[in-house]
Image 1: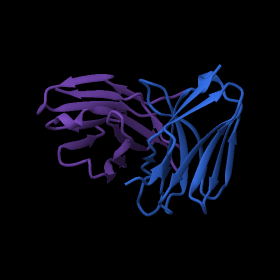
Image 2: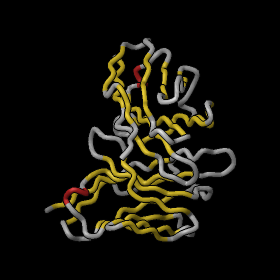
Image 3: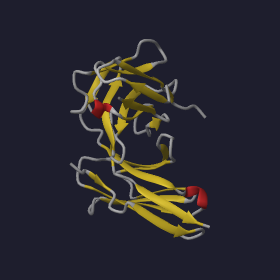
Image 4: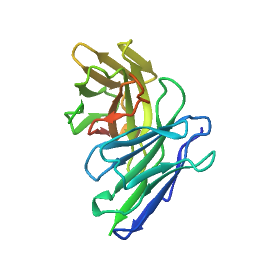
Length: 113
Length: 115
């Protein structure tokens, strides 16, 4: 069964450094998402992406965040200057057309030191 | 801002019995509801969904019930198996306007099924 893959599984970065989280969505999906889950808290929506542009973003997704689909397969989340509070699990998801469920990757654990 | 609430952080059930997980929501614009199961160190795995035009959807041992007037949904697992032990998340989305259906999650309920 096709699945969403995320790399790396764990990323440790110094505060203030840039980090790029990578995702390969399911191949025939058109909608792409990033979510995050801070330890002990809810899974929170960050951003959705469709037709090569951001469809919607949450308050969390400020100017330090950006997303890109650099080629036909990858979908990336960049945090320009990381802060301690960016430490979380980051999940990528994708879905097909219509009322289809979103399928999630196994996440990247981001640890900011 | 708790638009989706799962008020029971944990539930323990005997193998073979029914597990009932509950979820309440406040936003009347939600029109699509999903349940996800999550094991440690893995991402949420889609389990079952229901559109707001239905009140029940069944898939094998899993049934989701939706009560729109009460803004409540529940997931029934019958019979429960030890492999069902996981955290279960309720999620909702609204496909109105230009929204692409970003999901709003509850806090999750940790289900433990005892052999």
